Amino acid sequence: GQQVMQIPQYQHVQEGEDFTTYCNSSTTLSNIQWYKQRPGGHPVFLIQLVKSGEVKKQKRLTFQFGEAKKNSSLHITATQTTDVGTYFCAGPTGNTGKLIFGQGTTLQVKP
Amino acid sequence: DGGITQSPKYLFRKEGQNVTLSCEQNLNHDAMYWYRQDPGQGLRLIYYSQIVNDFQKGDIAEGYSVSREKKESFPLTVTSAQKNPTAFYLCASSFGGASYNEQFFGPGTRLTVL
Image (cartoon, rainbow over all chains, first blue to last red):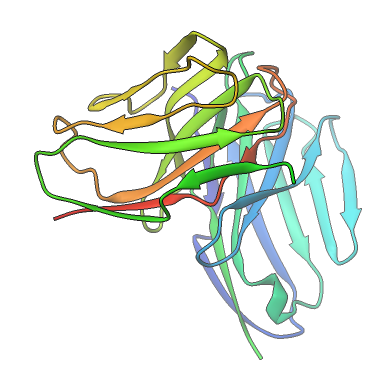
């Protein structure tokens, strides 16, 4: 069945270092969504990418959707302690609003 | 204040007991979802509903049941048939059942079965 994989599973960085998480789908996606879950919290929507090769920025966060619409990445420049949490990518399965989530990448930032 | 509420935040039950988790939204969303999250894992879909009085099984529906009698409410019952019910349960909603709609999550219920 359809799968969405994320790497790495965990990443520890020193504050100020950059961070990247990668998301790969076994099938072509119509769009991809990214969510952030703070420790002890719930996932919160960050962004959606729709077009092939699309790049979107939110302050220090850069999101990219691959040309083949099967992979995506999230890059954080100069991490801060507020970036701590688990970042999930999610792609639609079917046309019913259902999403399939990657396993997430948990980011820890040492001050 | 619009949003999704889940209660209770923490729930303890004895093995063999059924338990119902509450999920209410006042966002006027048509679609609602239940996910299960285990440590170090992503979100797995239990059930979803695109409209009142209709719902479909997700990837891990065995041992769970739901109802959707009102647009605002989508309670989840964890039955005694669920072999490993201890987990973090998240409810979500979205504007409709289209694939491009973002999902809004409630704060979650952490269920521990003793």
